[in-house]
Image 1 (cartoon, rainbow, N blue to C red):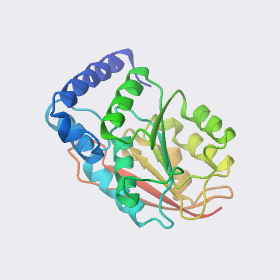
Image 2: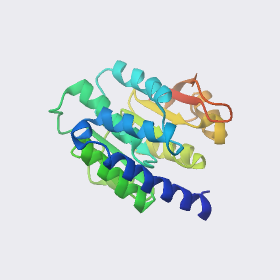
Image 3: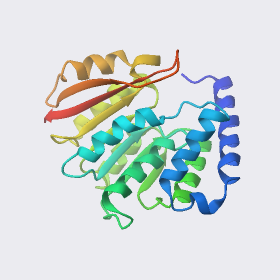
Image 4: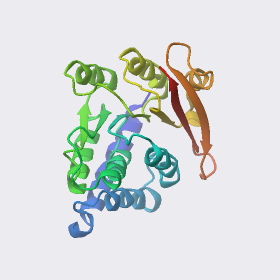
Length: 239
């Protein structure tokens, strides 16, 4: 659980990140999601440390998405934070489809903190992908249920978990219950080594216990000592 002191630190760093990004030449970042993603990395690596989905980890997920057939159309992200990974998903989808993406290509990213929601939306708009990447404020489970009930999400190609680790498994199982996965869908989870998501790992490593079956692999990425380095990639092999 995030403490008030941690929330204050996150808020301070988010404000610093916003100032850093918008102090850059706008022409270098506008309508360029990769440039925005790299600018966030520059800040987190050289100015103020933040637990974002770093480049090494992103490369693991990117390789999976670029190889997915048929091509990725719907991504769910549980935990937007400052929007680094959300911007990167938009950049990857633009690489796949070009600037004129089909209307049914969407990223839905869920975030509880209103300040992070506002910052993420600003950065997504700066990157020129606001028509594709949608930030929803509130618990991811409730947002997903609403999207499903409205017919906006009827299938999921990739679900990314990077929020409170204790919710990884319940949110994965919600996607199962809504029957959104198909064979070839991906579930990708960050920070499964630290702070750790043991119940989630046990579930996917066992191949799942219900109708959805997983082939799960752990990818170790170069990381500084004491920092999480594992990305768990689980491919749905049966539904």
